[in-house]
Image (cartoon, rainbow, N blue to C red):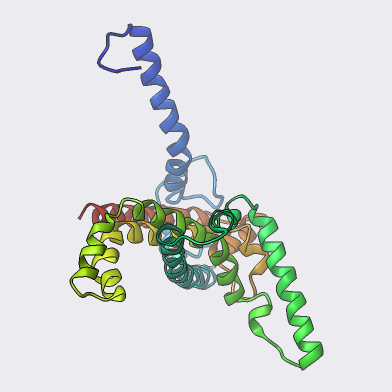
Amino acid sequence: MIRSLPSNRSYSFGFGLYIVLFYLFLFAPLLVTCVLAFNDSDFPALPWKGFTLDWFTAETRDRVGIFRDQANLTSIWVSFQTAFFVSLLSLVVGTMGAFLFEQERFRFREGLYFLALAPLVIPGVILGISILLTANGAGLLLEERFGLDVELLRPSFWLVVLGQFSFITTFVLLVVSARLKKFDTSLEEAALNLGAGRLQVIWLIVLPFLRPALIGAGAVAFLMSFENFNTTLFLVGSDTTLPVNLYLQVRDGSTPVINAISFLLIIGTSLMALLSLFFRRR
């Protein structure tokens, strides 16, 4: 409906109510989690028993805050490292894939592009199990035939990186490809006619044009890797990531420190989204 046209009051009321309920559904759970991070209770749930910062800074026999909890801090650091390497690899390979599919013409291009998008429709659980079984099978084969013990083929940090990279690259490919479709190829042709080499054209003209997409794709890849659970659960080794560590805490019964962690993650991801928006506008 065109908003400039006259409308009755019931429609306007219904439209406004829908908007309110929609955003309430989206943000109310997050708001409750943030509030409970400061609840002076030994359980991560209502009722409200007063304001406290214990779940951030305390270090007593009964309460340990997130900044004093070495296990959770270690898992946060592992997740940060994982997200860094996954986003870096995904940006490089995804951008190269975007160049391949958008600027080259070759046989079976459509079929290969479809295969590149296949990880989007494969459930993360299936992807994690498949990578685990394949890696274990290859590791056993190398050990039996050649006596080689390849750490990458066992549940470990780098296997998690490889598993997440296998599907997060697809998101980078889509984001960069969408931006590359808008590129004016006459700029590239003019630079080549003026004596620039192919690498100079990419570095000085194409990549600056792609900078907003690269920043956005890098932020999305980092956040997707940081919060990934279903694929990581099957590939993680002794160094657990934060989502897996939180799952284990919730399963075994946790304190409100889990709300404190959630609060910090919400603030962190919001700041990253704002920074990404700022750089994209610039």
